[in-house]
Length: 161
Image (tube, rainbow, N blue to C red; front, side, top):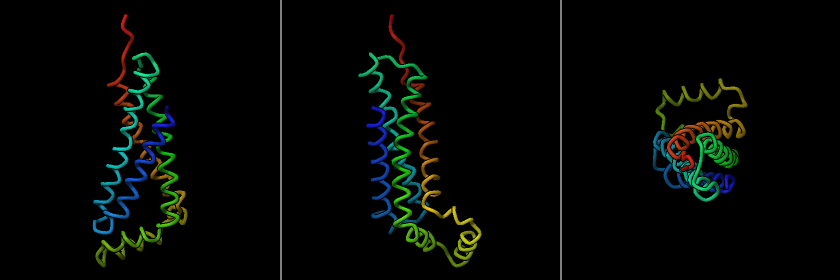
């Protein structure tokens, strides 16, 4: 159940991210596209409360403690984040240069020089697909932890005596 909800959420996030890159990014600014990326991550993390509700109602006789819900939510968030990590690594392997060029197109001359100087000063590993994928993994997982906490708090249900 955790794997199913995690993979579903991860595929949703990756699919929305790919659609964002292919259809929205060519006509939008990096800020707008980044905002849509975060919205895609949050939308895909709705699998966390759905998974907790499924666990509570279908697998645990209508009962779930805060700790149980949090464990389920963390598991779903972890699987989801791993799927998004794999997508991000592949994205940066195949479109990393296009992505950096797209970012640079939105800058004026002064901003472009600053951007290029920052890129040159960065350690080489920062631009690697693995590191970029890790950053995406970390941000999605941290949002997932927050959603797991909130969901566990609101969805807990004690047994009725």
